[in-house]
Length: 414
Image 1 (cartoon, helix red, strand yellow):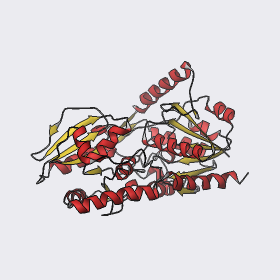
Image 2 (image 1 turned 90 degrees about the vertical axis):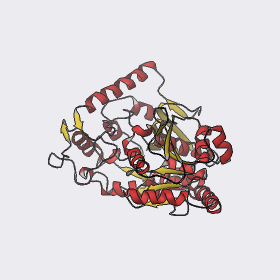
Image 3 (image 1 turned 135 degrees about the vertical axis):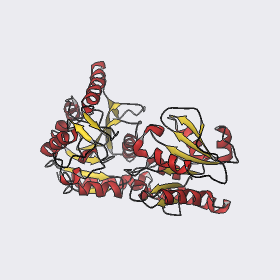
Image 4 (image 1 turned 60 degrees about the horizontal axis):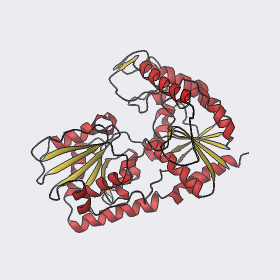
């Protein structure tokens, strides 16, 4: 059984990291697995990338055109748009590798066009690392267009100009709706969204979480971690992470900022923001200070952050899985997140963190206060339970068993 994973990258972005983890695990289990990427950052020999200078130049050109065309849509929604329109030599590469199953992951940045997906001859599995597979050009949708179908009448009032989402959705409907694709969803939330979608609600779909490597994500001593990061021992530390830091609207930075801005804690609090640009620290009220750590690509620094903090906040209202949440728990750091999102599959309420009522800022604050108010014994208990939960439910053996079962179901059809 030969598996080919297709992903924009191997080590940049949550969906790509998840793809690389399952690829590595399959190799360890003796399965013939390869990964085809646009940008390679690992040293894994079984990760194949674009080799020619011309292909790399064309990739950057296509991404630039994607951005220009996306600007034709005038919208208040600042989310990323991906077109999946431009041709490439990827079908030839797939034919050269000749896998039994093609496993699509996060395939945007013009990695593969919608048309090229329709031309794949092998059995296809597609892991939904966001909503893009069943939406228009958007990666997350705040409308019900993906449920009922995109048309001119249900276009949101905040949009004008060329309706790119309608155009791309129609292209997917024409080329992919009848295509034999099996979906894997990393959480209950994204599974239910897929099953509501007009495009793929009839497709076979499985719920399989992402692998969390507990050796990569294990705790350091908190005092040592704080000393290493020059963080005071007498303040509470809250952690917020996002690829674009506070600039990533969907990740809910404005939500946590408003919660903390309008509340004075009895004990001083430091909110650490990692990802995005590194900035000067700031005070948002008398009891809360923000420190920006910028991008942290190495795991040691991230482990230090997880180990130094008292809790991690995941205030996103739409989250496919919640990689930061799972990594936090693996490092013994409990989290606060909303119900009805990806992290709801990761957090056990008041056992490994706190699940707030959906979009209820008061209850989210209740969760923060509850965790910060625990005594030392209860805090240590939650820390231990958090790591044990990840070790038991998100380890490579359990997750890869589920994937292998799906692979075999498809493979056995031949």
